[in-house]
Image (tube, rainbow, N blue to C red; front, side):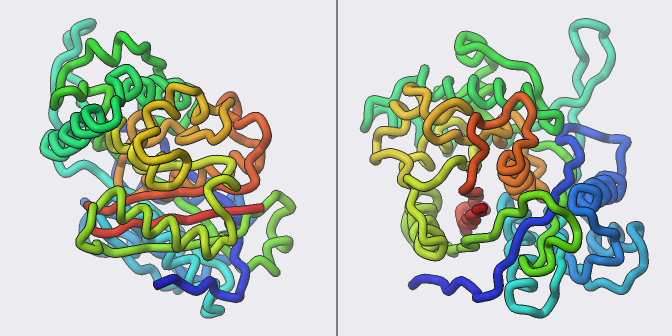
Length: 377
């Protein structure tokens, strides 16, 4: 069953991020407040202009959003905390979008912020000082490793093609000031890295880390009051819960169909895509599920260069979860910020050659829900 697109037009007015990484000494409130302040500056708003907010997080104490809002200023706005596993940020964005699209509010903010529950210290080989490493969800990666082996056996996908996703991801992230990992890697380095789950080395896997993000939405008719920048409209906001079928591929296919129908677009109309790449095989699976290529052709698509910044359909120009990072609460909002800034021509050295006019953001939450948003100018 499809979803109806509300008649009221909603645009993305601005976004702000706190660089993803590991910050044992930085309180989540500081990260959230900084992201909000940067989003307000990008939007041309003051905090008192915000009417309602939704705060995505998975690891924080109760009422985290209320505490951040209180630090921003006691204006009386209603803040709702949102948790939806990896898709928490996308869920917060959807709630903010619906609040404006329904006419209940004119301006809304979606915030994402998260901290690790614990830290693992190791010793660097250079200076013998303790450093904190980003953890990997090894159990989850075993599942992705199995999917990689199956895809390789069924379609002839190669380990080099999988590694190319990581190389692209790290190269894009090297140009992203908000990315956790900003050092490019080679194909050989991906192959030689520590094995997590055969055939996936650590450079095939996303980290768990920390950070903050905020995205501001408003009714299209009032956007010119605040700034004169291009403000993409929300052409589609689609979500699907677990259907009993494949919780990644088929769930994404069903949600993509809804989103394309709502936006009046097809995959051939997209100029950029940000997908949930917790592992390299996931990006390849979602090429296929989103219709960017035929089933089984994902490995050949990355090898062709089509998903590079200079290619036909750039994917994860931000660096994706693998290299930009996956702090969970902020992750989906970071995708939407990337699409906004690419559309405005503000992505610096990772700028897609012809500024995109249509972009898609995709996240899956624990295999139980999928969100897809399409922005367009």
